[in-house]
Length: 115
Length: 114
Image (cartoon, rainbow over all chains, first blue to last red; front, side, top):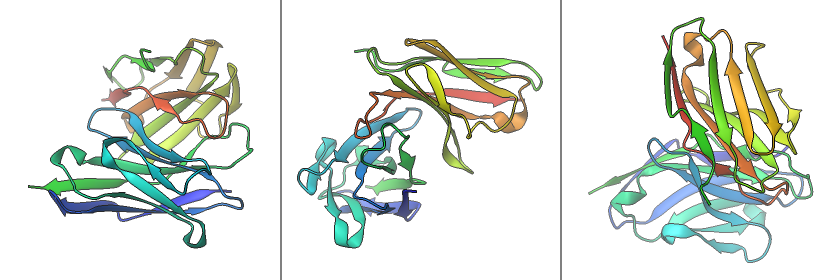
């Protein structure tokens, strides 16, 4: 069964600094991978998804993620953090060809941005 | 597109009372999911439906929890009787029936059971 591990439940960066949120997946076949963001008192919103086209995926709000099969990783990055990026971020995985089994979510990483 | 609509946004009730949470998925989506989010356990899948049919309810914590989807545009999650440990944020999400289709989440119902 597929799973994802998010390293670090809380990451703190200074405004303007690089954001790096780590996600490693476990799957028997190359999966579909997703990053979601949750702002306070809201539901999760899709940031970006990887479905086997380009390995570098660009999402909303300047975020991007790179699929690295050799490292079974799908880390989320943003070159320069903004105060508005403070939120909780979730990595999720889905098996290809599984019909529609639900996404499996990681436990989330809370991003704090310091002025 | 109005997105996934959940009601109520907040619910405060006393232990032992029945609670019903409601969800209207995005039109055209044929899969619907109920999640529960708490600080301790994070995001937990409770149950999901494909084409209005419950597929997997193994995440439903107890028999006190039940979910229905009488048609493609409406679902309910009911807790009867409610207990303080049920206090959480409950999310509904919908998607197309495809493993690479993203989930679209509602804004959740914050349930407090006193």
